[in-house]
Image (tube, rainbow over all chains, first blue to last red; front, side):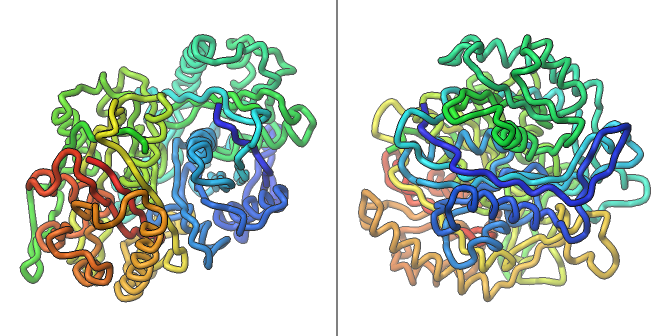
Length: 310
Length: 310
């Protein structure tokens, strides 16, 4: 067990929403840049933790689609929060599940004694890359950012009991933004490949693979987790799509034991898992000491799970 | 001490070179895509380790400027190397020093007992974003990729004794590619902002800050490293620029104790530190059991150091 606790969390959701077939989606306005939302969520997480940036030993950017190709997103968050204090900053990226991967790595660094308090900053501005010609993704995603302060826990009352990840790269192109990096640079954009610089999701293929990944993930949890699944108080899944209910049914998780807020919040990419946790805590569905299972499928495609004693 | 060893390394350098004022720079041709170079270096690292991909438990992408905005670069390397085997993959990014940060994190995961062999894949295709109108960067950078297999060491003959990072974000924009992410999307490119999607370096500001960072880094090493600097057999710096010699002089490191290959190889971004290590091993300047200090400044700006018993 890595003895860490979440000292506090902060959320920034855009002011404006749009509606598709009764489902609410958040859309950042011009002033709500990606950096602004990331930094606002970080400030709220510090406030919620009763800390200032001076208490933080390291900043991790856990974002799917970064601010700039160079430098890493964490440095730019660092610039806004801590221009005078030279704490380390770097990015961890497993796309939609980046928060889980970052929390896992942070727990090892805290367990080693290197850091006491680490700020993880997640969230995406997906609307900048959504394609109106692809309704199944255009109408699914929301903008939003979530941060958390992860601290050393002196007792075994809080911590990580199990964490794992698998990547099924046969689905590497089921959800992607192809252009914008070194494979297809912005300078190569022309009228015929413009859509390659937008988000594309092969919805059906992604869901079929996600269900296979979910089932195999649960086989691993049953085999390798130190606690049985029946002891989990709340399952916190990535809000990947409207197929969440059928996925959870396949995994035999009863309705009252998981968070499904796809209708009201959409898929917030890297912010979805931490936002669902924040939501569960806020609504009293998760209390201190509860065992929660953070889980999610991600572009790549990867699947992550973590059993965390909140 | 995290007991890990480098089982093997692999390098891919482009076939073509160009020359500027007697300095050689590597430039990938059309067939040498970024992904191709990354994967070739990974295959060579596996071969050098007498392993196949079936021996690898996790793939880390430690690249500064990724292949696609989504998914992470490691998934796309995974797709080329291991489409049938669902080992985890994710990215770690501290720009030019990503290899050091990744090696540090990998050592914690191996020490925890989670993995036995992890493949770290580094390297950049900087030429795709170089600006011919900015000679001090255009004539400095090279393309190239380097991978390493990191394995559990059963003995204390190999491992990490010290690792640290600091970020001085007042230099966040001294070296950057501003456009291409969410701050300035490829769709916002026009005739007047085209150069914003290319690499830009404020050479003088970057060097002045780098020297400050180097001096403060060495203060930390002197204070916190379990071994004194005089015991280091070889210093392996990031090949940041032609100012490397004057930086090393300021740090009182004698000429014969560090690697300077800027003239023949240029700054290979995330590949520079692992390439310099590979070069030192290949030339017999570093032998098994030697203490090496990997170090470097990075866009962000960050500075990393690691004392490693090779």
